Length: 143
Image (tube, rainbow, N blue to C red):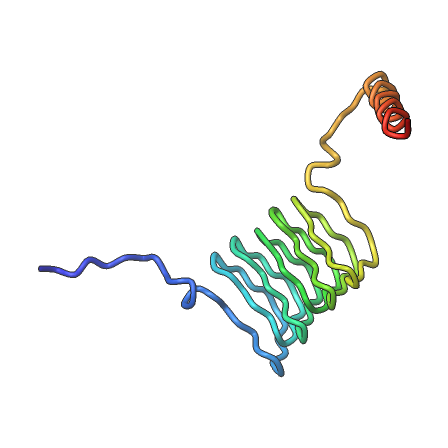
């Protein structure tokens, strides 16, 4: 019986790593996941998940599906899915995200923007109604 070949890569084989003590500059484009425990300066674009370890440092522009950070990010961080900032993480720069989870102790210096936030258009009449509804709910809860 002939063996069938597949282009699929197991999770372990599909992780690109920059280990602690390694310093790289340039541009990374990957369909797989990336883990950085060393330092990287440049642009990262991955359709997968980016993990920045506690000793990891990324300087530049990052575009990824999901990101979990315990280290340092300097620059622009764009995450289409979930951005998870652990207690030891620090981000200096601009963050754009789909969803975000931040542990106590994580530091953000810069701006955070929910992806698609600029596309949301609300009429002044809707804003007034929403404010009145919120105030009414607050008064009901206080009573």
